Length: 321
View 1 (cartoon, helix red, strand yellow):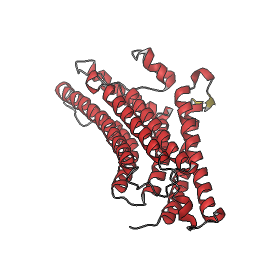
View 2 (cartoon, rainbow, N blue to C red):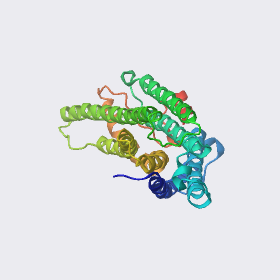
View 3 (tube, one colour):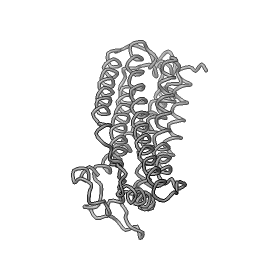
View 4 (cartoon, rainbow, N blue to C red):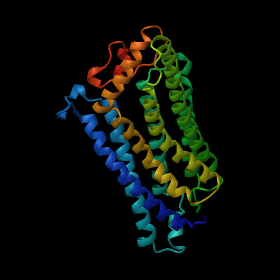
């Protein structure tokens, strides 16, 4: 599909506002989860609020809202206020202008912060053994951060040049950034699913030897939750990478939607740690743990609600939440 720069910008603004509306809906449920507690939904006391997660959520909301606002401002300047030669495309192609630079910075912040927090939330909710060391994950995040700096530097160096995000000076860095992000999220989700599946298989073997029953597979539901939470965001990043490689102006609507998808994925994961979900997860963990005590070698544990954390979880991991 061939799109002009003006068409791509307008389409990108429409897609971003659409996904931003979805994001706002998830924000309401996420705020309720973070600020309310108990069946009566009472307000949490300050000591009960997970301030790290709450501050990250606020940051993602501010960045997402800021990008929507300046995106609208950019279109107004190009289609309503610009009176120079070349029309709207002339204004939109000012790649080193402050609006284009601000939107690139917003995209970078959202992706780096979202990747870091999403990965930590998933890894903290399932305590993995040393085999799945987080060092590899953090190294990939730092590589993405380095690519983001190079992307911003390359874009800022094109002063007074009229070009797009498909410029040969910019595209290598943006492609690398999207590629690293997609691979990182796929690996994180895949490692968690593989580890949970392996633990479930060990428990099922022990259950078959002790009671002969193997039809109960509670951890399959946990696998589905983790897969669903990571699939949508990873898919959006991967599609953005493919569009970027194809040198299409569709990069604008896809990149804008991906920015909002970061916040949506974050909120969905938080919502799935609500008390009702935690009660279900606690039952799953209790069933598996009772079998594991009879000899199943597993280090996988699931957190319950913040007010009912198991005593055997390290205090330093508790402080992260």
